[in-house]
Length: 226
Image 1 (tube, one colour):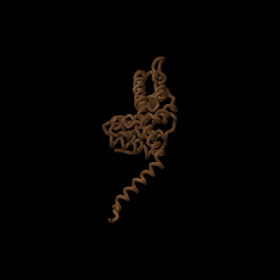
Image 2 (cartoon, helix red, strand yellow):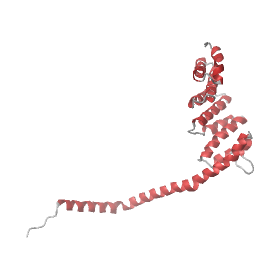
Image 3 (tube, one colour):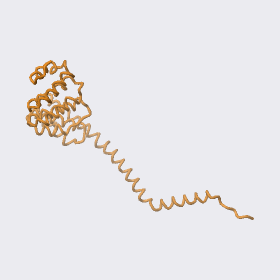
């Protein structure tokens, strides 16, 4: 009776199984640790969002309501520092750091400090604010321009006025206003060429705006006539 021979693929399968068993015996603990770590991280992220971030967002938004009311009433100190019951913007920033409300509070705080004449703090808080909403970000850049202008840091002021004027150029009220402030500062610095460029941009892009209607006289005093 002839000897029965196993097909070669059966031997290959046995080798694969043996190698898999050896791999698992050697690396089972590290693989288990890695999988456990991934699960822990996932649970931690989910838990943070559900039990910490979302409740904080809600609390911060509720706290903002009264502070914004004080801001609209032009009660700047109460808006910043709150009253005996309600938190102000500064408390919201520190207590609810990382929330959308705290970010918006940075904008409000910077605006409040600008109104009180504390221009360094105005710069500090406005620079910490950012938003994808172009109209609001443009306003923040404009306020930074105002703060730097008050600090007599004209180069910085011009940079932020130009950012404010060009970020959302569909705004035919604020955009020409900020471009005008940039041009006016350039003129005060003796940079007439740059001033003319700003004034001319207003004339070309915003002829029907308030600044556009009067811009010819500013161009004329710099030697540019119709």
